[in-house]
Amino acid sequence: MTPEELDGYLGVYASKQIALKITITKDGNTLIAQATGQSAFPLEATEKDKFKFDRAGVVLEFSPADNTMILKQGGGQFTFTRE
Image (cartoon, rainbow, N blue to C red; front, side, top):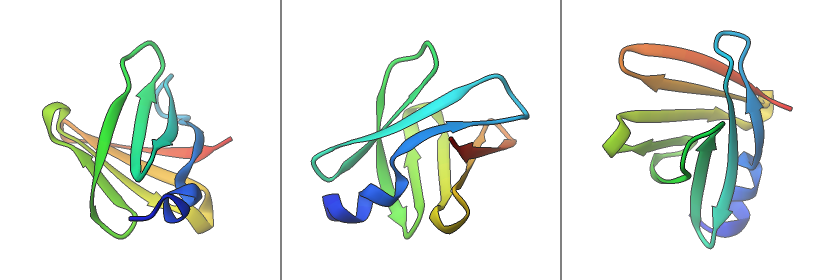
């Protein structure tokens, strides 16, 4: 993906389901995710609006039109809204 395409995903996302904020930034043409109090990690695009980080078993599915993101990890699914 191009850096311009990634711009639609950038921002701070918060969830009402869990007390966690995830900040999405970019480094060149790579999305970077960082949860509150945790180290940042690179995301690998798997298809349009879907990214993964295999080492932590994380999948992020974005819906830029709705300003939402779904975090899937460890059998859980959590909805985040861009602030």
